Image 1 (cartoon, helix red, strand yellow):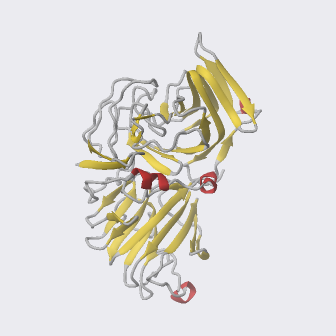
Image 2: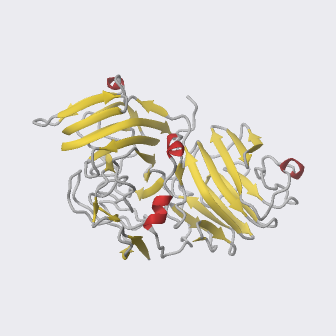
Image 3: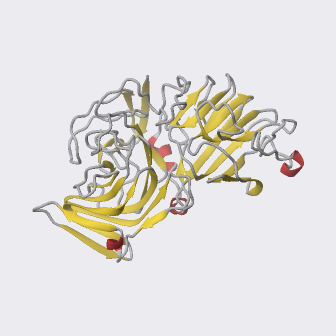
Length: 456
């Protein structure tokens, strides 16, 4: 399987790069300006090759093994169009990210054979067996936006907290239906749980796009359709965590503008009281200056870190930052070893590129899981306010920059206390890195949401 990536340069010369999807075996550890093999789009690279791990496979549940993906094996991406998918500042401030980039099925896998494909900025399906297009990650509580358009007779749906091939929607997951008025559970209903009467739904124009806005938290779920509240479900039973999936049952349907955000984000202090949440440490012989202003928390110099006093295991982190220049090297480390210097997974904060080409990261790329998987593109130059999002769910790690997903990584290594040496799912602190004397990064805001399904 291969991915064909077509990126226009600023000189409008189109560059065709063919990247073979393969598991990468990497032996060098840590952050530094060293050459790395580029991670292919959709691959999950790790230090120890595990042939049982497939790209974009789910991370934990025993019943979460997808069938062989029936998604396109060749993808052509346009850099300008990808950059156009960046979310607006107000959307980023609200925590939203895109689950669909408008061009590829990066971050998704399919269970069941159907003709899932991308055309004209839409995910489309029309033929095949009952099939599910699933997010690679699993999550408990969230808000979801998704546009859909289909003929009246189509039977489809949006599944929440689901396994790849759900067997009992009455108890194990939620199925928000898209179905004709004569279906036992027409559009707007939760199948086998709560029916929305067609008279309450009103007429659905098959020639227009419609938008579901879903909020799932704990044992409650609410649904808006085109901005109107249509469904409230309380005290439901389901798996604590699962995928979001789009269903093909019968008929054709198209989806677009698929966005998600976490709920109940909790801020880590980036103001004058930063020592409430962080502890500073500096490598012997180095220096790191920590400054605060109305813009946030600025780190200068290095090697050093600010390590959080709290520990986090499965979480969704959103950080807004800016760099003095695109070549500044910083990072957000997580599941770290307490009181150690940057022993954790590293989400790279560096926007350097080669040959003026965003598909060629200069140092893994912003959002990369350093030494594990490169960012598939470098989004922006980082000198203006930039938002990076990190979702860690078991051994599945996904990252977004300005709302565009750049990494989808499964850590298939053997467990180890130190993420530099192996997989770590256990909780650990978050560390903000000052990499070297040239580092100058300002963290304007950092929020963390637990993936645990509780409202404490």
